[in-house]
Image (cartoon, rainbow, N blue to C red; front, side):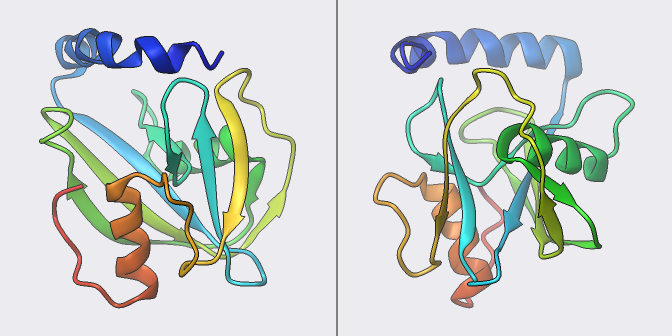
Length: 156
């Protein structure tokens, strides 16, 4: 499925146009999940380069929290077992017109079977001060905001 990474730049505008026609505004969620050692959970998709905080789009008839719980289980095999905290809201306008992303802090969870089929290439745990080189800039900023006291940037 890594071949999808090669065609993703070409398909992205078409996918975004379809989302725009179907939904108008879109909403996504990302979870900052930490383990007992303070490491942050990240995923690599089969269709995009780079490391990302796990998450995805909020579907119709689904709350943002429900989407977060679903995406964490699908992508990373994480079942949330306690409260989550909304830490920031970002506009993703430069990359996807009309899109916003909610970032949640997740500290209480248990492992479970990941249910995504073919979407995730790799799951990894990283110390906030030792992130992989190919983490995307927006994801890097979210981690800096949470762990290094950086100001929250309203743009993704």
